[in-house]
Image (cartoon, rainbow, N blue to C red; front, side, top):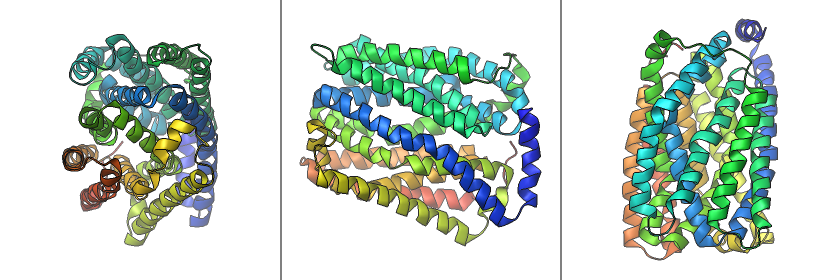
Length: 430
């Protein structure tokens, strides 16, 4: 039934007036963003408990290990979550077949994931974090939370935005409850948190898959997977490179500045990340419309309008956060207050960071996955080079933090140049 409804929706989009299309898009956005709004408050509660129960050093190690896990979660499955999402968007009757391919890809990819994880631990964490808690944190992201994300993406592809929002809220509620369990321990530490985090994410993944994944039988169809493999690998490579340049600057700070500096930087970047929630929801909806209506971004005025909108929303969210922290600096706890005092130094980072993500979604929606891969490769190389130059030439955190605005501005200009130089090319079919 849902497949029929989805397919009949498409022609109606073309037949309806621009005002009706805008109304439909606004309605979908409000339904999709509703979960994100609730999620912000739950995520803040989770962030408050973890960041203030652990020491700043322990939180830096946890955030950095989690970042490694997020990067490796994009290696897991070799990007086959992308074809699964696309199929859910345009051919939902094939979800069972593509879900089977995704499960197979995850199993095949695990030896690669574990080998990379052990290498990263040996080079960066051996002296500061034992192997077992590191592996538990990484696997929580790679296998468990990634499974929750897979169910969320499939439901978004099916335009079940209310269900996807509920899953998001549920997933972060489980994380918040896990943080409460940590906080009530007699002597909480990072090792305990790694075990609690792993168990809670495992329970969340099992519940979400059982209740919210479409009830279709898994069917292995090798011919389908071979055809989709180049796209999947391009998406996987692009996402790995995106998270290398997005997350692993924490690893550079850990290596060059130590765990305490990594903790301060991780707290600042977690606060910055909160500004992306409304933009990501908008990008998801825009990507789906681009798959169906490639001509949507034909005019310069529309492109520029979206860019300005993302910039203003991101900056407004950052300013709102700064006002709250100025009125009550310890609202998120004493550990966060220590780091948040320097948040104003990175005031433009959210806007440039969110614009880079938005441009990547444009390339994805247009089927330009290989260009997206090359763009992220270029951004990763440039960013790591600039971050290294900052950390080795400036020892004062306030000094190098303010220069991160210039780093992200440079990355944005590179991304914009690549994105808009290819946006006029023909769209690749889904």
